[in-house]
Length: 632
Image (cartoon, rainbow, N blue to C red; front, top):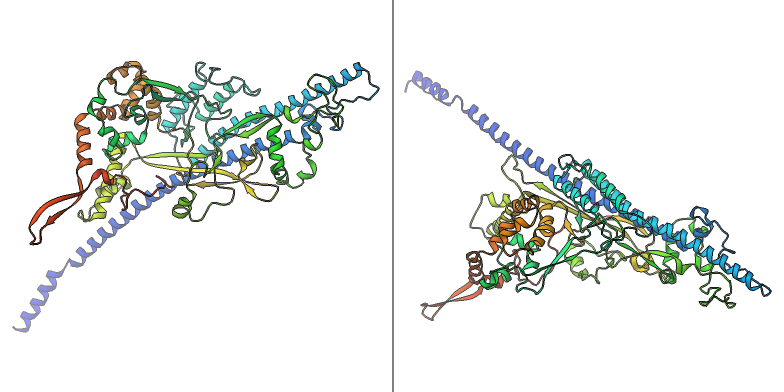
């Protein structure tokens, strides 16, 4: 080849290579753009989740802080009752010297009339003391209404400060709640609740506070609530059947877990329902429903309640004092020990007057004992140790906590600040909606056993979520105030060991959601509340499922129907659907082939069926392990 031809060939090759760098550059730009888009999307999703988690944590901690303030204020008022300031301070309407107050000043030469007048004067002073103590009791009741509601409002502001918007469903529930409080047949019914509680006419102030927390009685204008809590309001029905049905249908119908299992075809959880004979679903199969109303009047707010009650008598004081708990509470503040004198050091237990009205000369100080006339704020039965409540400390400390419980903090609290919020199931830029649908839509090796297991449980969760609720991911958090007491011997005890409330709560902290949950229903799940409180009671008054619509308000029926609960009950009554469940439960889960010595097939042996593995964890192992269903 001549030189000119070689030159021409080289030129042609170079001309053919023109534009290749441009193609590589375009590809690089596309790859970088996709990477930036994905990174932006991931960052956006993470930022949104962090914002929601921060908001719900802030709400829980804020609510717990106000529960702490409420309990400490109630405890301080108990100390006022237990000490001489109740008598010596004129702010309570007494303002007397303790050495002469409630004393029967008589001598051996006193006439019967002088003795009668001295006794009458001492009794009047005892009545003065009781009136002053009752004023403090009324103040404690007011604090138990106001403190938690301030905490609830402060928690909403904390959530909003972290970017969480107003929650329409929660605000609608608050409007329902307000209407119940002003309803004379419910909260105004003296058979359900005393209208004057230890001197406090609570109902109208309570309703006004709820109204201001909501912001408006118009659902489109109400915007005060951003995150919901659990609530168990007065009159909330508990349903049972008399005579009982088998299986106990009404108990299953009241369980949200069961309804979600029906939606997700979770045959394992539904075994008693799908194994029941088809004849059990004939006629009024749900049984003769009876209503047992919640008559537990808390004597305080039902949002973030602190669960205190009131006991009159000397025994409460004596118990706390003998153990050294009152002295411990007094010493918590510097200088208070020198200013406060306990009543039992100023007055002995003997009264100067006998039951028959005659003078008791055996009384050394001739003063009335004031302690039996005083009402004390005490903890109710909800306050108990974890062990008493059946919580396995060993399991929690071994499997779920970084370290063990601190001494004195291992108790089930009556003051729990729980909040939750559900985030709408919106798509991200990359098409993922939430964790469940992420697994469900992800690619990869579909033959991988781990992938199949993840997809299986993600599909169940996603299907249940789509049928039960319009929301996607739920965020929740629980916090509580902590306190403990030191006994006279130096040992550490739970704060409720004293029985009376004392100002010893000094910490608040987040705790695992599964460790403690307040009683009641999720405020943000208004449809479920209406289903339980309106639909099921109406179901008990009719003979067929179709008749329920005419037995309740159209608004409430539409809410329950749109939530999918009526369709789920119809699904439960479908004999073919239940038969499919039984078939799956009885189908082979594991098995093996049997061969003779020559390798010829003999038979196939079933080792286990699906129902044998219903308690197995997805990660492996059989159902012997216990633990929480959810951790924060």
